[in-house]
Amino acid sequence: MTDSHQPVDVVFDKFSRNQQTFIIPLTFTDVSDAKDVITRIGYGGDIWELRVDLLSPTPLGENATNLPPLSYVKNQLHALQSMSPLPVLFTIRTKSQGGKFPDDCDKEALDLMLLAVECGAAYLDVEIEWPESLRNTITAKKGASKVVASYHNWTGKVAWSGQEMNDKFNAANTFGDIIKLSVLSATIEDCAELALFVRDYRSNHTKPILAVGMGANGQLSRITSPISLVTHPLIPFPSAPGQLSLAQVHQARHLIGQLPKQEYTITGDAHTAGAAARALEAAFAELGYPHKCKVQTNGADSVIDTMSLKTKEDVSSAVAEAFVRITGRRAPLSVIQDSIWLWSQ
Image (cartoon, rainbow, N blue to C red):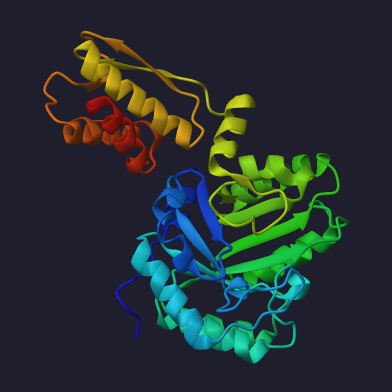
C-alpha cells in the first residue's frame, strides 16, 4: 500500500513538450540536515534524487562502503517527502557504479527498492548491471513508480556512436520507463557525438532519455541534455564529476545562444515599481537567468503593473507570478520576499 505521495510524471510531461527536466541529487547523509535550506536548494528543480547509498546515521569515510539500515532509509524518504512536494528519484549506486553501496548486496538493494515503491517514490533508478531477477522483480512490483534504467561507465572508452553503447541502450530500453546513459567523456568532442545520439533518438522514440557525459569534458552535455542532474552550493558535494548548478546551466545556455537576454517592463510609481523590478531581477539572478528589468510610469507591454499593489505581500505575489509566466519554473519566493522586505524598511 502506498502513501499519499503519488508519482507525478513531470519527466514525461516536459520531455513531450521539449522542455528540460532538472533532477537535484541530494548527497546528505541525513536529509534532515537540509530542512532549513531544502526550499532554496529546490528552486527551479523538478525532482529530488535521493542517493540512498550515501544515507547513514553515522559519518562516512571517503572510501567506505555503506549499507544503510532499512528503517533509516524509510525515515529519510518520509522526511524528504514531508519537507518538499517535489517527486523523488530513489537511487542506489554501488561502489563499481561510482557510489558507496556494496557490490554484493543484491538482496538488500531489492528490499530497499521495494520499500521505495511502498513509500510512493515516483522514480526508481535500476542499473542494467543488477541481476536479471532483481530487475524483473522491480518491473513486476513497481506499481505507479517509473523505472529509470541506467548505465554508467567510468573508463572514458565508450563511444556514443559505438556498438557497446548501442547494446547498453537496448538493455536499458527493454525494461526502463526512462533511459539513463552516463559515461565519462574523454574529450569535449564526445559531447558532439552525444548530441547526435540524442537527436537521432528523439526522431524515433518518445520515451524520455537522460544522456550525459561525466567529468569536465562532458559539462556541455549537462547544459543541453533534455534531462539533466544539477547540484547546488548548499549541497555537501556533487553526486558526479562535472555536475553544474542550475544557475550555471542557465548562464551557460545564455553564453551559447540558447537563452537570449530579455528586458521586462515594470510599470507604476518609481518606488513600488523599482522594488518589484529589483525583486524580479534578484529572482532571475538566483537561477542564472540573464534577464533585466526597466521601470516606466505606464506601458502596454508591462509584465507587472504595480499601481494597484498596496502591501509588500501584494508586490511579492505579483513578482512571483511574473517569474512563473516568464520562465515556466517555480519562483524563488524567499529571494523575492527578502528583496521586497528590504524595500519596505
